Image (tube, each protein chain N blue to C red):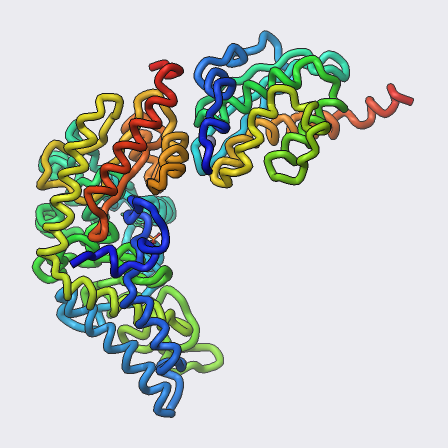
Length: 156
Length: 404
Ligand SMILES: Cc1ncc(COP(=O)(O)O)c(C=O)c1O
Ligand SMILES: [Zn+2]
């Protein structure tokens, strides 16, 4: 890592130390814990849906700056998106961190979350950056599995 | 004499390696001994009648004798080779613990134990419905005499204690613990993983019942460990792993076991590890523990002095320097240790961050994790200066965001 400031940039620092997304939702539809035993990072993600739209999200927990900022910025990015769009963004973020996606156009859809692109140069911290994104993935998978039947019939 | 020059990796990479508590670097002499073994002596010990296998057996067994002398064991067969300290401790838990602990007996360990000297005892305690009790540290990160005497009781059958804490660097008063435990009729298992790289161990003077360590923290290769046990204890224990080399006669339904030490060395052993460990001991002895202690005292005292000047740090460290070895845990107040470690890494300073396989200790201290700098013979004041400089840099990066 040559340029550390590219990882610990203003945006990431602000979100990690001082996040307005760190709170509890009034009535969350889903609440899921994510845990990174290496670091001891621990977050609980709360999600409120409105049909197929992510209406609101919040988180609680503790951990390193990268895990906390990544959670908070993910919330900013995904809030208001519909689930299909959110899944695309999640896939792109994971691809960026794993260096599988480098196309600038494609990365644009990450909005502020593009701030984490240089974490891919710090293999020891990749898990920290991905924690929240894997957790939201779990939530969306869960929803899909429990809801398949009813969603299918609504859409048909 | 420049010790650093003996360690190729420290010449090849421009780093301040401050993670010897996790594993030490290896001197050229150890690397050479392993490669010489493969070039000149490689065969499966104990299994061939031909000269080469005999030679392999000889170097393997000679190293056992060397280790016995190194820690002053009474008998060479009291030295059992294992993978690491963890395996040695599991062997004791299974082959001694499960066979000798009974319902309502007490097992006593300290809150600063590494998971490897903790989780196996949970298993024994649960299986046998025994109690697992803890000796806690005082505000000075030490075990007080009162704590030792109040936790080890007439019901205590086993005491497990680390000689030096891998998190705090505290040197425990194992002489006192062993004497007191013996008075109460308990056996003592000493985890010497963090002490034997730094200080002379004499198992007879200590009167330790069992003592374990890993080679890789004392200049030897990864994957070789030692279990020392008093002969009369080992003789009465059942084998831990079954298979080749550890048997005497095998019938279709029954087996008689080999005598010590083979009884506890099932299967083809890590011979290159044993050879490497022998070379590591030669290196340590040629330097001498007096010299090692002198080098480390100077470096560690310098490090403590410099770190104490950084008022943005929390240090988890006894005030009694004479009870402290070569490990220093710290945190930048308000900054997560993994972030600190990443920033240090970018400056070429290798420290460990995390819970250091000591979660109950972390919980007791009320923290998640720490950064840990650990020192060894090849470290210099320049390494400490690099650490301090990198810490200042980390603090300055985070300063305006820190909320405590
Ligand atoms: C005090 C202590 N005990 C036990 C161990 C376990 O050593 P190993 O992982 O080599 O078995 C360690 C090393 O991490 C240690 O520091
Ligand atoms: Zn993390």
